[in-house]
Image (cartoon, rainbow, N blue to C red; front, top):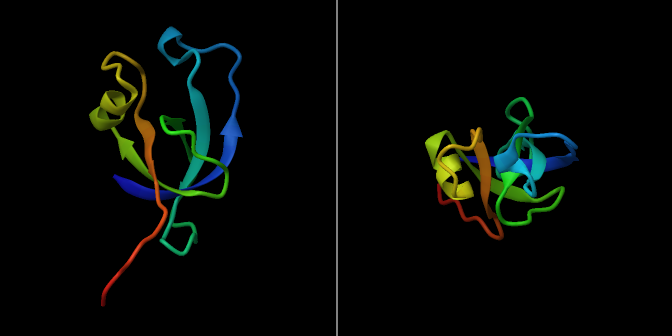
Length: 89
């Protein structure tokens, strides 16, 4: 799983049947302070996240499991919204 920031929505009027009715979001890998650490990618939103929120993204087979469809062409899924974080040094 990775930490990411939701930076946008993505609309696709035509898509694979298992993605119909699924919300697609654009996320960027990020540090906990919100600064980007990588290139943006698309993730299926399983929890109704919003733009600007820090989230946890599952990738690969874990993402397909989160969506509930092992045969779906999903390789990233938003599985949690980060409310509070605590890091001890």
